[in-house]
Amino acid sequence: MVYEELNRQNKIEKELNHEIIRKFARYNQGDLPVIYFNRTFGAIFLMKEEPAKTILYFERMNYLFSNEKFIEIEFLGHVFGFPITKFTENEFKDYLNHSIKLKRDYFNSYVLINKMTDIDITLSILN
Image (cartoon, rainbow, N blue to C red):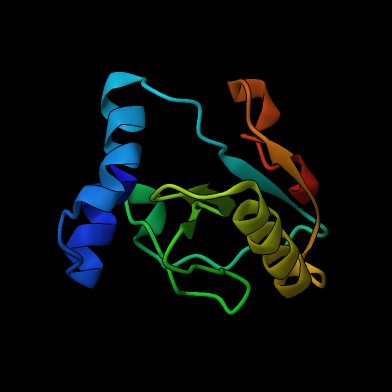
């Protein structure tokens, strides 16, 4: 869903170098890292219609970082990052370092998601 929406919003073509994300998302092939960023404090800005619609924002906030290998989205207050094409270990480390620097005022950590419970679905930071 994320890749389809990215294509719709940014008019990127379904290039062969993005085949890795399609195989992962549609056919459960491969083992791609999906990152969840934990917020430091409980303030989330949403558009009025956002909770009722499935809206993915790719460039709404200045702490979202994307490049030719990785993309980040915010969905209902949750921020996720993941690769959209093949990458090296060093490219992954560089991405994480850059992303963490952008987020240092708003997020305190990140988690490589292995299971649904790795995500703070209830946004407990708001309590």
